[in-house]
Image 1 (spheres, rainbow, N blue to C red):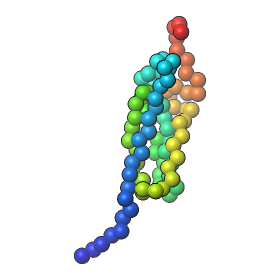
Image 2 (tube, one colour):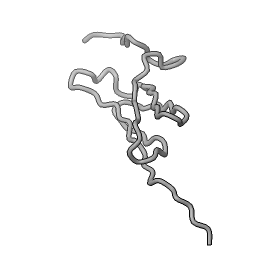
Image 3 (cartoon, rainbow, N blue to C red):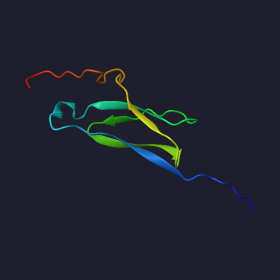
Image 4 (cartoon, rainbow, N blue to C red):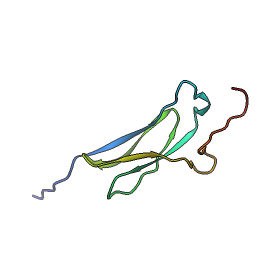
Length: 86
């Protein structure tokens, strides 16, 4: 027999929700950085409003989620503008 000690692992749910006056942002993609010491960073893209499941992290580890302001080519950046009224 071969026994291996393995820590329980879990995933992180990253969501982008919109406020009542944010309908112009519906359908836009938002990029996040998910970081945990000793593991590679993940960069999930979430279409608002919505969620994605990320990673395979040891239970009890520290995970930091940050929304990126630069969303890549063709994606909204720090300031999102729309045309039209309102």
